Structures are given as C-alpha cells and as structure tokens.
Image (cartoon, rainbow, N blue to C red):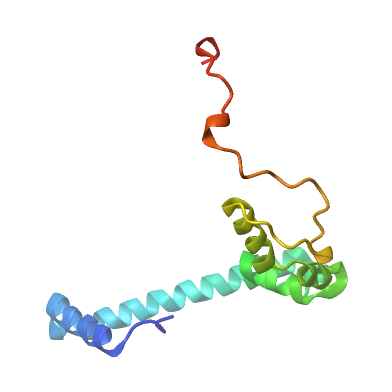
Length: 139
C-alpha cells in the first residue's frame, strides 16, 4: 500500500502527526486508524466471499483483480484460446507508424507483402491551394 513512500516522506508524516495530534494522543489515534482499516478489510473480504457464493460454482476461479481492464487484457492475451497471439504477432506497430510517417511527409515507402494494405494509397502531396471553392451559403 505504501510502496511509493520514501523514508524522508515517512519521517515528514510522523513529525506532522506528532505536531497535529501531540505525543499523548498519537498512540490512541494510531490504534483507532488501525482498527478502522482492519474493519474495512474485513468488510471487503466478507463482501468478496458473499459475491463468490452468489455467483455459484461456475465462477469458482473468478478473481476480483480481473475486473481491472489491464489485468483482464493481459490474462486474455496470455490465453491462446481466441487466437490473439497470432493477431498480436501479425501486427507490427512500429512498421505501421513508419508507413504513416512516410505518407505524411510525402515519401514513397517500400511496398511490402506483409503490410496487408492492398487498398489505394492516399496522395499526401496535394497542395493547400487545391481546396474546394468556398460556398458562403453552405456555412
């Protein structure tokens, strides 16, 4: 939970707590905070158990961490039932971005058979003067 707090920040928090609550009340405040955190964790765990019981045996391997989109996608990409590895390996983002960059700068990119783009290429060499005529009534 506090993996990103450094030692200097921790010392600052302790000094601030002593100044705000005083050395006499600080142990009682720490006990109250820990009791509250413990109750919240117990409530969370009981809610998770209730949800698992309500879902039934079909969802026995359900993990609440899977509700995080990043975790869910990472888990699905590792699972090859859907054939996503083949799709992921067939898509080269660097190559696609290089082709777009070349098209924007007007350079001719080397056509490759693996690019999968057999459609017409967009002519990016048009000058800004090739705009359609302005129609005041249309605006």
